[in-house]
Length: 141
Image 1: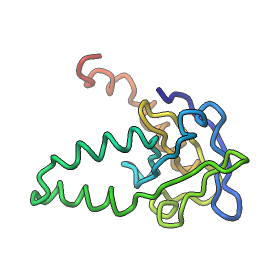
Image 2: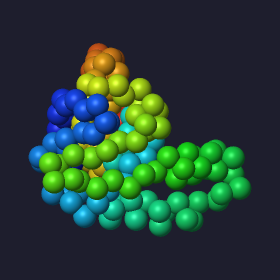
Image 3: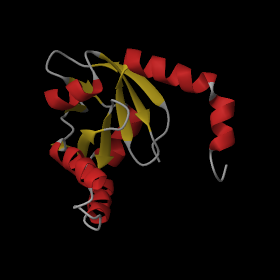
Image 4: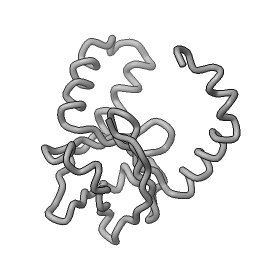
């Protein structure tokens, strides 16, 4: 399970040093795709494979499902860790996330999310301000 958050910076080539606690589960490779909420989602190859199995059973002719699948799959890119523990996030994904240089890498349970630092600060503060109300609406909590 991926948990925690880490502040990092992209280098001039768009490379990100993956935080050390997240590296081992991603050593076999990973897939990045457009995330929900203007971020980049990164999945281990194993998790991505299970997502692909699920999406193969979705009804492609349905409008919203078709739109979701097109974006999820069209924006997907395979990533590999280099010897320095870096990954290269492609320009289209950085653009989707509004990612310029300062980022927050956070564990989101079964995947990672990369957010522009300013966007994450704004989003997380809004959620924290309403945290008690949100908790009331979370089923099963």
